[in-house]
Image (tube, rainbow, N blue to C red; front, side, top):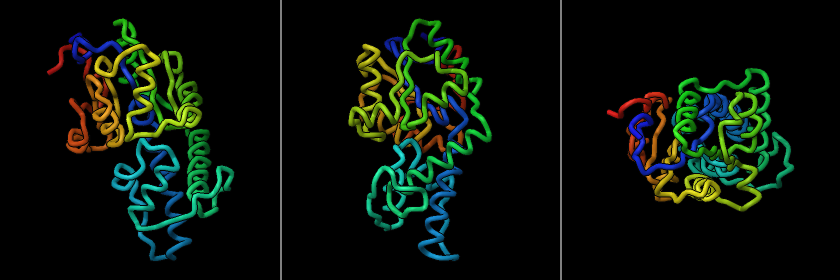
Length: 247
């Protein structure tokens, strides 16, 4: 299977969405920054330390379910908040309130800016399917179906395990491997015969701990070494670099 840059044992490909398939990771980072900066300004006043849309995003929230991302970042600052409820409105200083504020901002930004798939990723997924491999999207986003459909690539995947499915089935999010393992199971493929494609450090850890046959790190932000340290077997800046004989 040299034309796909994968070991010959691989029978299924499991793709993260934001940052791997669609150009939405930057939208999520901007929404997190706006959400956390507003909260920190309310809490600490004008001298607050802002959320870093690169370092804090990559380390504490990227690839995680929204509420987990809130908890992770707040813990990094030594901040505790009540959990709140799922209907807490944006501006309510609870974990769920901040998560809902972020989601409101993401949906607004996507509506304003639209959704674009990476052309190299689309070419790669089409080649994967042409080679007879099965495909799945594994995303922490509860908006995955709408994003994939808006990008015009929803029909390229046999299985979708997203934030809604994870909540329904009580699957822990990345860095736990459960969502990837569920996707592989639904494709009828054992983990050792599935490849994981991720741009998030949490996703790398999920791929490594899940015993998957190959883990591809997609470096959109200059964190190739971190991706390798967290479990990537190979790192590319775009998926179509895998097409042709692997170097």
